[in-house]
Length: 117
Figure 1 (spheres, rainbow, N blue to C red):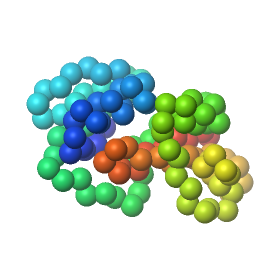
Figure 2 (figure 1 turned 60 degrees about the horizontal axis):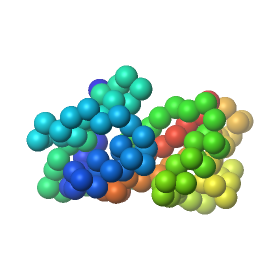
Figure 3 (figure 1 turned 90 degrees about the horizontal axis):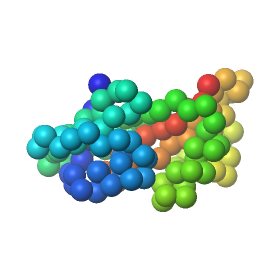
């Protein structure tokens, strides 16, 4: 099970469901529940989200370039941090090439990522 938080359940439901394509399961009044490839993701309703300066949630993908392009088409904006090895799409290649990572934010500013190993 994974958790994140939102101050606006409607906006979060549209982002995680419509833009990211996660299957909406329920809204129990405390959290929106999504199925993320068999893992329960609870987006908790809160009055304030304190934005962390690190990745809060991430997904492993087999083709990061294709997934980045797919998400860009539905309005997801990828972050550019100016890291050596980060390309124009926002995909960063780790030293040695063992992993590629692309970061983006949800509507509450939570940092999310895609990783290809």
